[in-house]
Length: 222
Picture 1: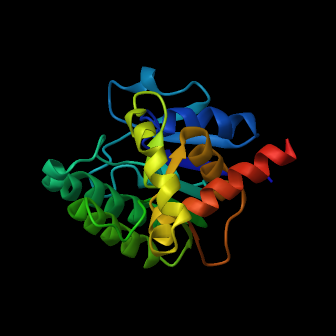
Picture 2: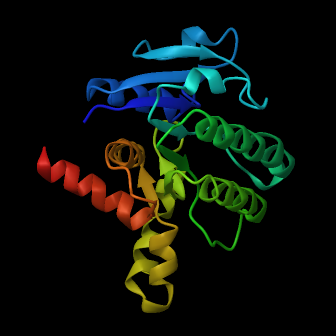
């Protein structure tokens, strides 16, 4: 079934790669962009000019979409960006949830983060607040919870793979290592596409083990 998908963060690291995949599978995509950034948006999407941090700035353009994918967040999160998490991640989610609800969207997909975790507490706290906003919107909702995504420009954590393998072998650390495991860019993109195409009745949470399983299922079925 083809969907009409509205994407925020369409020019970002994840969105710029997700949009062509959705379009290739027959979905109609509209994406929010800042004024002057239209040329950064993949050609497969219809550009919607607006401010992601201003209430009701783009809600009118969401009408007609059945799925809302919210990808906006501070790039390269780190502990020294705590204030930005609140002014960008949280505010943009407040705006997105209201726009989705007011526009009659049926399903909202939110790219969150794996938790609990022993570090990045400010980031996780804000993302947890954002999840609560999504949960309260009354729509069908999908929460996707990766930890660190490996891909172009994000390759140094490959050095941690032996540590992860060891932790996943030991019962006391297995659950945490799996929840906070590293996923590849194509795996998270696969999960996002799957989420768009498989809306839940109410709520579904796609954690790291599920992200990996969906990628394996897609690979086996191709």
